Length: 104
Image (cartoon, rainbow, N blue to C red):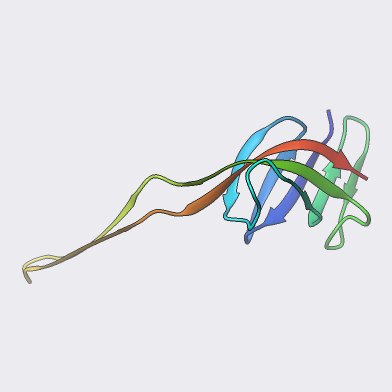
């Protein structure tokens, strides 16, 4: 089973064919196909290729399944005995992808 480590949105993800995963929001329509070309590592059962910093000619093709928002994250600041507390929250914008193929 082939897998790759890709970089998108400032984060790294270990992907293989058929898996679904969330990344930071990408400008792509739902149902469209995108190519992620920042492959840092490629590996199979008998072979592995480490990029310096990227693997030459490697890419991952994925289909956009959904554009959605993550669960709300609460940020609570508090200073004891001062009467100070502040609550803020936010929801990240995410893109759900399904890996179709890993190309070398």
